[in-house]
Structures are given as structure tokens and as C-alpha cells.
Image (cartoon, rainbow, N blue to C red; front, top):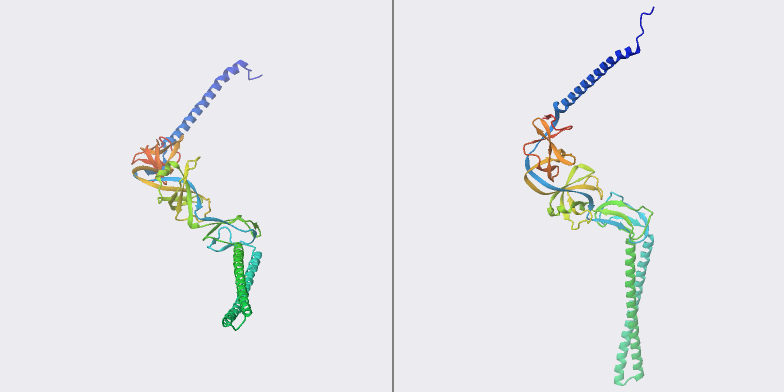
Length: 400
């Protein structure tokens, strides 16, 4: 006999529904308790647990007004060196980065043909000089003969005056004297022609010597080779670049500034320059020249800064940043640039209010080297915080 009596389906549904409602209610309670616990934890962490922060005391003092602008390293004294004659490169004794002295040979073209031309021109000079020596000797002989003829003519004139000789002898003496004069004049004319030839051959020698010298390219000043465009064996044409040379003592940073800052600048103002290759090493500089031309598109002008020192490794065109000190303002509130933050594009900083963080919108003024002028938003004596994860009302524990 069966101990269990089969229940009706309607009875089962009626008994299970309250159980399901109790289970769902329990889950909702646990979810609510969990959410409350999480909210309490987050609230405690957000507002109850203090965050460690560094403190910066705000005070008024002398503020150095500076202008900043990007720039590139350039040289006031530089030269692109090439050949003035066509030829094949026979030697390139220097390379990029080498230091050279003024007058030092830095490139050599093949020069054998030019040397032979110079030797030939020199031989022509010697030949003409020998011809001149011969012509002068001939003139001296003709002058000696003329002297003899003149004496004979004088003797014949005396004898003719005394009636001792006939007119025919006098005429012969006169003709011989005139012929002697003509030969002397001819010898002198030949000497003058040869002297003119000698001048021409001397000029040829100088041209050949100049052509030979043009096969050797020398440094026009003490400097450093910054680029090399050719190799040994290349055929170069007149004007084609071979090497570029700069004088390191004339290196400068050409910086760009907005035209609105032009009135604040003057030559001799102190500046600092930093290069991307050495971000932690500033270089002292002074304003050397102020440009007198504004770019019509960017509305910027250029200033040249003379550098007191250079990066360990430098290159023409190297990027840098200039900071020029253009004045001072007393009793000015400033803040390190690193403490300035932005909300929706507006500047501000975290200030200490009691023991909690408070966001302060700021009105900024001019920028210094590492500081910014605070026009409004902070007062002298307040404390600005430097810590991560700050928000309004967050408790703060100042680091000692």
C-alpha cells in the first residue's frame, strides 16, 4: 500500500510560489547590503582615508619675466666648399666631424695634367729670357759697330773740311753710320717684342699655377667639417659641393618668437638654451641679434642667441628651446609650472583647505623659466598640493 498520496498540481504551485518570493527577497537584501558596504568602503577611501601629498607654500616674491621660443642651431660663419675646375677627386683626407685649420688641404683633384702645363709654361719663360739675352748681346754688338761708324764719319768730315778727301768717302761713312743706327734700332725693337712675349709667358705661368692650385681645396678658416657630399674617384664640376665647413665659435641658436613680443627684447639680455639631446643641461646665452623681418604667415620673427657652451654632440639644424629673461616683477605670486593642472581646458591647482583638498581655478599671467605668474585664484600663505588622485573634499596628509 502506497504511503504517499499524489498531490494535485494546483496545490504544488500554491506551495512553491511563497518560497520563490522569499528567495528573491533574500537576494535583494544581500545585494543592497553589498552595495551599501561597497559605497561605504568607497566613501571611506574617497573622503575618510587621507592621501599623502607634498605641500608647496604660496608666497609673493620677485618674478623673472621670460619669453620662450623654439629654435635651431646655426652658424654665422660657414662655407660650402667645392671645386672651381672640373676634375676627378684624388684625395679626401677629412671626414664629417673632423677639425681643420685655415689653409689645410681638405680635398685634392687629379693634378698631373695641370702640373705638366705649368712645367711647359715655365720652360717657355726660360726660352724667351734666353732670346732676350741674345738680343741684348746683339744690340751691344750693333752699338759697338755704330760707335766705330760714328767716329769714322767724324774723321771723314774733318778731312773733307780740310779738303783732303773727296765727297765720296764722306758719303760712304755717312751711309755706314745710318746703317748702324738702323741695326741698333732693329735690335732694340726685337728686345721690346721679346719682353712683351716674356710678360705674356709670365701671365701664362700664373694662369697655369692658378689652375694647379685650384686642384687643391683648402679650408678658408678654422672649423669643423659638418657634411661630406663626395667620395674619392667622383668627377666634380665647378660649383658642385664637396664639403661643408662651419666655425664652432660662431654657433648660435636662431629662435622664433611671436611679433607681439618684439618690444620686450634687447641685445645683451640673458637667456638660457636647452636642447632635446640634453634635456637636463641648460646652456647660458645672450641675445646677439634681433631679426627685422616677420614671417607673413606665422607672424614670427627670429632672434639669434650667442651660446656660452655647446652640447657634447651638436649638429647644424639641431632643435633647441630658448628662454630669454626680459624683466622682473616684485611682490608677485608664482607657482611651479608642474603644479598647474587643467579641468575642461581651464587652469587650476589643488589647494589645502583645512585638512582636505580643494580645487582652485586660476588666472595665469606671464611664464617664467619653471614658474607661472598667478594673477588670481591664490593668496600668499596658502598651500598648494602635489599628489595623485586628488578630488574635492579628499583628506590629505602632508609629507614632512
